[in-house]
Length: 497
Image: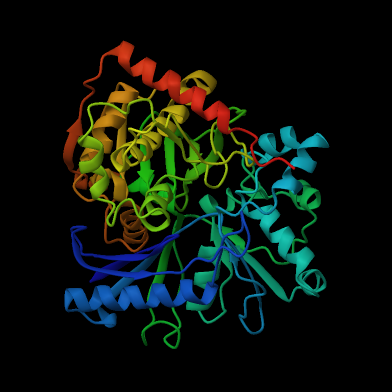
């Protein structure tokens, strides 16, 4: 029997089929479209997200030469803060999905901060007042879609992140839930209490009626509706946010273990144990995972909003490259960056800066600047932004990262991984299978259905493909990073009316 590990991400849906030994025996992928109707607005079609999941599972089964009846469980991980509201009766979305990168509620967050609410948000939810999170997105839909607020207050509307939307539709509208990791990304969740916060609902002006039930990350919640999912009933046995799924698949089960996932954005998470971390000023406190019948495990997170998307911009926006793999060759063709820096504030700056008004910037250009310099600057920026977060973990939370476990698409870029080790001054460990977000949902589903015995078995399954060791001297490392910080400062607060 097989577990279908679904990773519904920003640019597409990946599915890995896992057998009883957690070996990937089949893969499927479907791209999803994204629209940018106004500057700072990022939207997707919720129906497209759903069909990509069903299609990618079918593709993975075909790749493995297996049938839908061979599926023993379905695990779902998802882009977390992306927000969907829909009609309960029909399942029709009220509005396109507002993607986590969307900045349309920046002014709302600034007004709330100016009114003195930032400390409450941080204390209660572990988050910062930023348009990144789902709560202000949901409030925007209720405010701008005619009749939406009245319908929500009457119980005719459902709200959720992408996991909630998928489970609702895959079960034929029978189940409305979200797991603790996704709930902790809404700005509506009481981090210590593990429940929806009435204070936060009141602050953001949201009714409670549309909210989903909060459940553990690993449990058999329901079965798929055959009419919605390949003609079969399959247990849905895991729901988990994508970055927490990667943390789980990287076997970061003990406090102090850290990973970075290099995707559309990058996300550094460090396991902090079963007690909520102390309040932070710029790092996020979040739920790492919740196993059925066990206390919640927590994490500190640094969310970097634009990294892989910056490489996409280099390819699609500027035409500097035709394939992301070319960046390694271009970057390696230069002996140094020659003073060229790129600040990837394409969707504002996330942790630890949290400046939604920052904008992307290239600085240090001369007549000698070439496409190779641009490619190198983009890759270096990904590594610098990771160090920004790791530095804050040490300074603000007293957590020292002594090894970074890396995954995601850019973990396959050897130039970037070596520079990451160089600029951090610690070793970077890349596993054999870098599709850890999908693997995490599959592992959690396998635990819930008894296919895997426990975390010790999963820990033994993780195998290192390559370790990158620092090669830069300390003086050179600090000089490069110091100039990077100067570039960041120049990008701050740019989009100001």
